[in-house]
Length: 259
Image 1 (tube, rainbow, N blue to C red):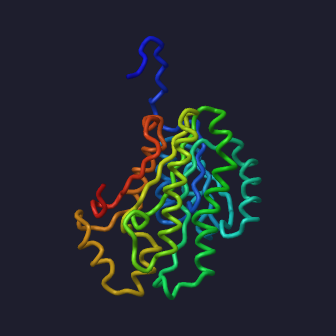
Image 2 (cartoon, helix red, strand yellow; image 1 turned 90 degrees about the vertical axis):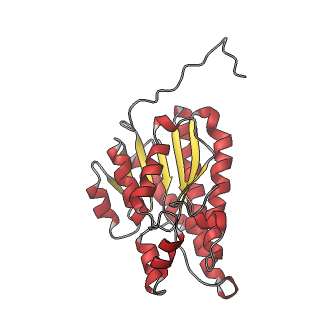
């Protein structure tokens, strides 16, 4: 039972993210663009981190958006990107890791070079960027970390062994950081999209006719998710109102995964 003799003041849960700065990796991707728009709509100044040629247009489309060109597959490039970020945004309050790559192949036939690449982009880069930005969050007493994982990390996904393994690593990282930083006012959560209508999924579907229809049939909501569905959940977790939610894994999947 909480000690009520010395009540602590409750954190301010009003408003959105006005006056806060958000960094979104993979901000030019399907989910990343939606997250950038969601956070900007809540008042955050958004830095779009991506290497995609569309990233500049994404940054321009977000009110007050700024671009951080960075290749997460290059550890040296990540370090250089962190240094450029310090000039663009001396303090980052919200960090959303949307960037990720997937190579689809049966595990027995998969290429270790692909495993290494997915490890660098999907796990190493988020770890290093978070490590660089976290001290300022804990010092300021406010921070939001959101890792975009995958429902495949929770349930398995045939043909995506290395991808789901890297996304599962993010679940452990999010929970560990939640334990380490909760007392400092920083929350750390993971969001696991189910099948979502993104360019990445469409590229896979082009090689597998009927895949989209089959996925939709399996989902209780009877449709694929949209980037906006995922962004809405991410946006809430980044607000002051979600300050008591940390160490959680939230599926945004139309019910295909239930816990």
